[in-house]
Image (cartoon, rainbow, N blue to C red):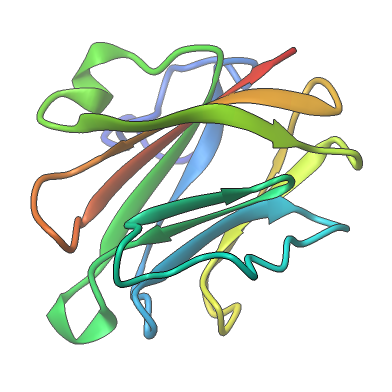
Length: 143
């Protein structure tokens, strides 16, 4: 995963799915099964900051003009130092029939593929303060 200075250094692959820091042109972070993206037909971004469809999650984040967004993905539990200052905003179930998810933006200019350990995940989403967070932690726990 990189140098010892990297925040996830020293964490086992079974605990840490990975991270990305990216500029989100549209201000929407997408987490979805690699083969079956959700349509989000009922999502209203004016009233919902996060939207979970069966196999896809949308999170409104800081737009690229305001700076980058850091996203960390964990299996089972995130260490407290990663969620400090973040609020738990969503808990649910994410269907993962292909046993892998991708974390990306709408333009696919940022993309992180994370293997998961079952075909359904208990999901927790922690986000930073404010209307347009610059930090997101995703926790996926095999069901």
